[in-house]
Image (cartoon, rainbow, N blue to C red; front, side, top):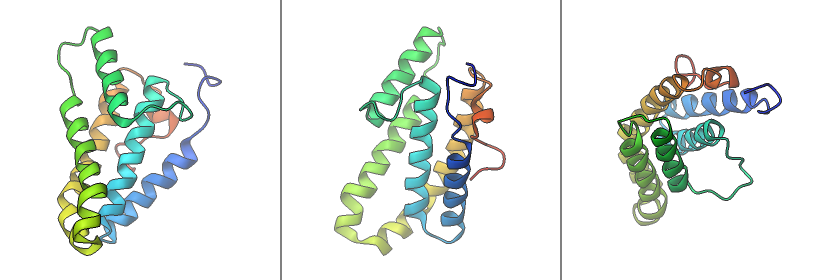
Length: 146
């Protein structure tokens, strides 16, 4: 893609990656998880060429990503299950745990998920870069970000 096809999101991406890393370091695991969720949504939207203005849920982004892999004749649905579970976990955190158990409990319980989300984020960037080398040029970093 040419430079005019994609706006420069690098400052926003870097800011959100820094905020997620800081939240993780400070023990704010719910915040870190939700920031990584937002980063992965942005990553998928940019990779698939879906503008934020278009009403596409995270579930639909996963389906479009699956369709993309099929179009590329890629035989394995790489990251589909992980992204699906990642989104389900986000929904459980927001819709069930926070409102039933409170922030402190939810935050303690979310630590492993937040650390795993950061790892998955880096791996997903590296994986998507095999299809689109501009992913890291846009600003997503798997080696120095979160």
